[in-house]
Amino acid sequence: MIFDTNVMIYAGRGLVSAKELIMSTQQRSISAVTYMEYVPFCRNKHELFVFEKMLKALQFTIHEIDHAISYHARQLVRQFALSHSMEMGDALIAATALAHKELLCTSNSKHFGQINGLILDHYLPVE
Image (cartoon, rainbow, N blue to C red; front, side, top):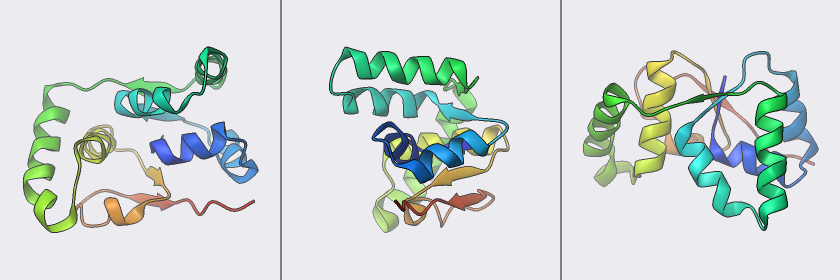
């Protein structure tokens, strides 16, 4: 399962349900975009250290952006930017999930629901 940035932020901020979801998932991954989106949410270098330590300890795969993912993301932006406000980060994350045939776990299903072939796991942030 590939985790969207919002789920990682919920977990990083201590939301127990997000942490439990991540811990209960066997195959964990994120897009390189999620890494780049998450780092600015760190309030200091210690939080960044904790994030990177967690990725390593839980054996997250970080999927890099390659030519095929970039191309597909461009097509998604072209198709959905004007009609659904598709932004670059979401397009790249969706294209990554599609390229690796992974379920995408997100709390923002509306950002991804219109994409054919993308399988979503909607995370509802609860205490």
